Image 1 (cartoon, rainbow, N blue to C red):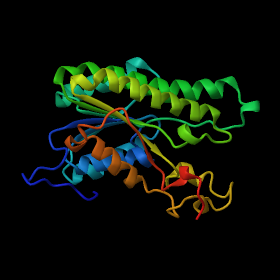
Image 2: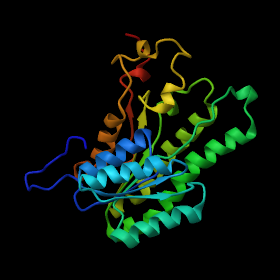
Image 3: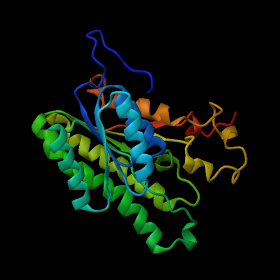
Length: 261
């Protein structure tokens, strides 16, 4: 497990909290699951096809003393999403944190982009964020406590060639984040989004070499580690972030500044 935040009362930062993370079997999602668990949260995360990876994470974290569950879920299916939330409530009795991490890419130039590629990305990325948020909101409002953290992207701010559908989906998530934050702030629920730049995951491995040395475009000189994104999400999920809501926070090493090293 990663470094743990211990407070003066001896409690971990998220001890007693219950978190749901969509798409937690690999990449940033896996790092988020591990980070929240290390901070004391009980974590339920979803997977779509990576059952083996998901069960391996559960086994590792349980061996370290964490309370972790994994559940299959199609985030475009409202009933599937409801089952995850209901299962979490049945197991732990509450939901304090939702991390809408799951999403897909289907890159291609807009002039040749098929309608299915547009619909799949929007329906999955935006639709899944809507469905999970809808499913937990009532419980968070009743508790008068909750943290919803949505996964955006730097491209929602800058655009990117070949990613019209993906950029549009993340831009929609930004707007949704702000609107929902305005509705729920008085109910004790914060809503924020995290917008990473280039992160060292399996996904980025697939595009390395297509545009030269990408690190030359990043003022910090390297890709982000998934754990760095997870640390920001863990902070936004904590009590320390109670006065932060409706924000889209870039974590991109300065890439969006368009300044080369």
